[in-house]
Image (cartoon, rainbow, N blue to C red; front, side):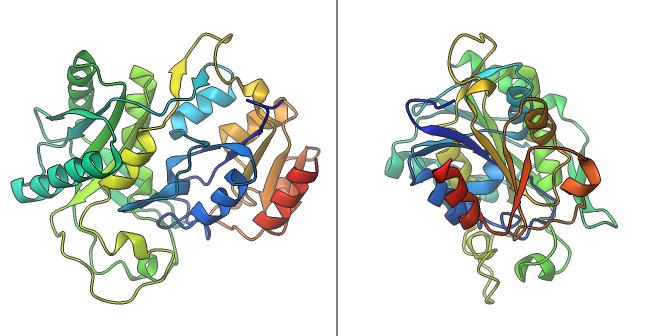
Length: 329
């Protein structure tokens, strides 16, 4: 089914899985934008368009966090498009004052330049305690020691009228120069634990949420890196992209008669070997065509052949081929 007389699709690249396209810093944006520029409304997870001080977001994209995406595909919630969200920012108490100042300057710059409604910010009462690491399989994971302090800060911002939440937590600086990621290889080392933080707020408060890490060392990296990673090596803060995304993140409602419903989705696009997620499984149950893109590989190995004996998963070589098939359908 169409939404507003346009096709409606979901373009997803899961975070922290080392996707060859979309596993770095906004490097899936150009692919997603081609879909959006062809009169298609597009649901995207933040990982697709987040790019440090840049964002690949367009007016007809619905910036939707992973837990919310899962709930949407299960039919538990609907989405209402919005382009004027009141954003509240939660800063981790562990962030040093100079690093915090850089982020406050950043939020003020985004508000001034783009007119984003940054409604309020607060600092957690206690350090959040974020840890991150890579598994032997090359997947990004982590732990959060004191996640409840985020909830208390979120509740404070909700009482001030905020209806979308940006989280900024202190992360230890990666050991060494993280050469694999800089060279466009492997997984984003912080992506997995970032998902834990945003899932928590989305699950408990049913509001749009995204996370940006803060590092003690905010100097600009002077060496040439892979273009896929470059947007995160030219900025001391990654906050702008999530503020731009959250400003037009859809509102979340449980009323099935209002807004966008899973029944409105015409297609789903995924990396070809990352097909074990809730959206894919639900799409199969609901006969939503799912395109598995061979040019986008991840550290996972969950393919059509391994997971589905019979399915409506369509394997194609490239995103361009996928788009052409969708436009002809």
